[in-house]
Amino acid sequence: MEGIFSPLKNHLMKYLALDLETTGLNPDTDRIVQIGMILMNENFRELESFSQNINPQMPVSQSAFEVHGISDDDLKHCKTFSEVAVKVMDMILQADALVLYNGTGLDLPVLAAEFERCRMELPPMKDLKVVDASNIFRKYEQRTLAAAVKFYLNEDFEGMHDATTDATATAYVLKAQMERYGIKPQDLVSVSMGDNPPADHAGKLYYDGDGDVCWNIGKAKGQKVKSDHGLASWYLSKRFLPASTLRIIEDAIRVYNEMPF
Image (cartoon, rainbow, N blue to C red; front, side):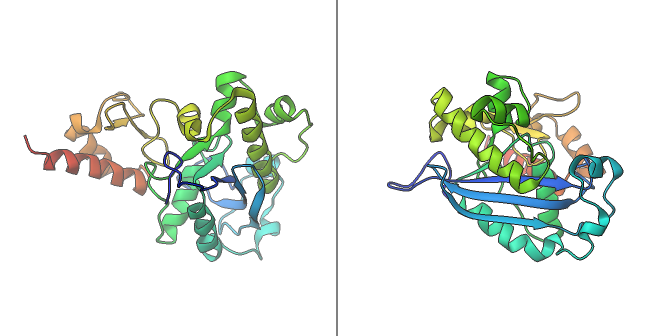
């Protein structure tokens, strides 16, 4: 997949704005109940869209229902994620960057877990260029999505917590941010994700300035994974981190062990 850092000559960038509604807020156990995706070119002209309610095969929590209003009855005859996984992955792979709003803490790890249940994998974070428009907003304005729509687009946002509406709003907030702050497409990821981009979909690890994988959790936060094999082995043995995160840890240790000294 061509990344946002190295667009092809005469290649119009493609952004995929994506939003999820879920059964709850636990990225390890909760499931998708609605997905909205808008594929746009770099001029933010819509190329393709996809919207689908999803049968999560588990109950929607009361707290989640109070947020998005999607009930178990609404979903019982809907397709499961496994039935739309190929379509979702196809749209992701068409894009040069995945655009989220406050999605790296929940949407991305939930999506990765859904793909793993289907024996599919999201591209690794080093290849999956993620732009979180909420990070740009917090960096410059410190607000929510509804406030971002009001601030950048001067519109009242009435469709919050409908996945397709949220994804569309996210795309247009990003467009306005790029125009307002003069952000170039090749700088989007660094502006959005900072100097230490995440190394895994769940945000438990990140890459430092040397390109090494570092912990973003616990007492070892900030330390290189390869610096303490005992800690890495402990996390690997407990298996409570997402499978995709565990693979990154395993790779970090293996690459270090294979280095010539």
